[in-house]
Length: 132
Image (cartoon, rainbow, N blue to C red; front, side, top):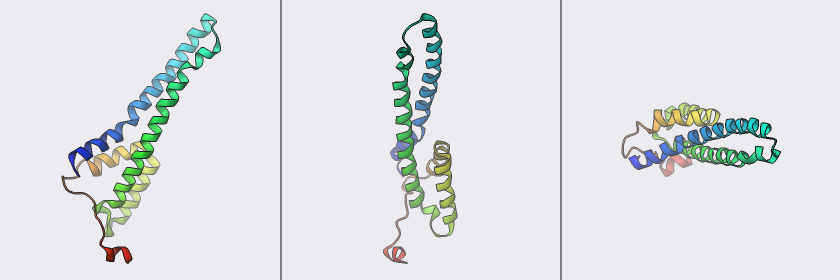
């Protein structure tokens, strides 16, 4: 695996974290604004100004997480280490990535992708292996 590919997988792996932080920040800002708007006696529509930003943050984080999860599941399925005798680990990693979502993706990145050497990529089975 090339270093550039590792870098972009790392970016995809950690991209939802700042978006979730922005979402949490916007969530608390909403309540802070709510108390000031309540004291000023303005219209209730002003309370919902931050909902658009919050929705965008969470939607983009969810889309990036789903795309990253699909890429990592494909990596697990194609990984040479999990072929033949180690197929139970393949199932375990798939379950970790699916059930733990972002945390599972981060763990898989540091345990399996980051230490991978240059040129060490995927196992492509022979045609005879695909038939049997």
